[in-house]
Length: 385
Length: 221
Image (cartoon, each protein chain N blue to C red):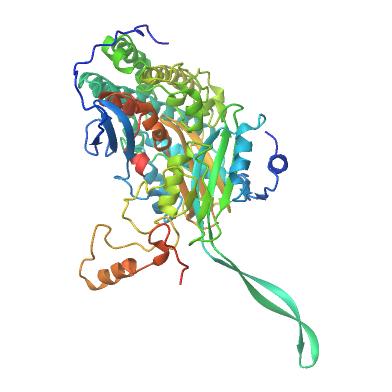
């Protein structure tokens, strides 16, 4: 999938003298425009080469899990929006799916279709803005990010007209969704989906064969598939290494088995593959969206048997997971039969994906660290919880 | 995928001496788990990962659970001599189950695309015995997640390469996810001088030897 330009000649070193053998410790972050939030890395440098890297986080830690254990099941739903604040719809879905598994709740057909539509819209806007941020990190200052945000804005407008909020949607409920589509929503969504490939064409033209981008991303931060599997990497980052593992196919949750889509795979596992993975996944998402919008049935939006107030699931435990835009987002719940969960655990994809940050960065320059970190796609609200 | 009983039987055959118990999970979710003994846990997990039929190569989730001391009362019929006559009398007995900390892992297979197999390990108690074998040498994905369990629950993982606090700051004393955690009124520094607030802060800052430092643990008074 790479577009040539593999053998770029290595430039001769500009600095002829450097502190041989001496390591310089640099603390990158926590306040840095390209750390995507408050995130710090303690880096040991030899010249400009990274020899050691320890990520430090917890600046946004608010013990989300403890709060979840002290509120009712429904009370945690708006709080899941704040985990990965780019993708509140998929966070809602993962939590609702886990509770539905725990209590054995069925979801009406229309609600499942709406969930698929909203999750794929979330994926579109997450991947688009990630590409924008990544290009911004690499020095394409502003313009690509604004292109991406222009499209994201349209999707957020759709979310707002549906749920009342642009980013903190709090839209899903156990056994369905909170409210039905407002009049005219579907036409607007269709228009957006029809127009989206034009944006993708334009954006891909900007990035795919750009010489600077290729020089900055190809063979940077390569990840082997063995390490990726062992380190629990999920999502586009895993598939960039060539491992075919997409929970939409593997678990077949929701109504995903009803839709035809392909899972894009990379083969080098470097930053370029990770970047292209997002661009290709957006095209597949558009395909899913078109099918789902065509098939959307009429009917109830929520299972009427579920009592949302004083909701008490039976005793037991469950681990539910979905394919979020960043990777496998899971919720582990233990119920002791009361109104609060005994244990409420979030398995955040970006937290686990950060495990191998050091392995990716070793031997690369400081400037590459920012590109590698950007290509992992982290949101600190989810990492720190 | 084969049933949990078959996995248990095969693992016990592969790792001699291993004691595996199936922990049932009532409710519609139906995800029962395997409880491993601490001595053989790493060997059993190694078997689960490398066995060609199972190939559970993806450790998706690792987390801790805190179970407090529980008292379970039950009614027992006891024979007693009352006023010279032998009678059957009903008495309530209270059984005390000492608390423990648990680490739960969810394993999947990326090769065969099946799962989950849930495994759990239990500590002896919630104070100085809160030690478990680390699975980080087998699954790299457990590295940060086990650090998080240590940080929030105070479970020490033997064999973990870099066991430090991860979400809380290094000077923090207590383990906030434990069920008996007492919240300070001010996380940042000394107590503010108000009556109620001062009392609360004193309560938090009173010495709790079982929580100071990793190695200086003494029994809970």
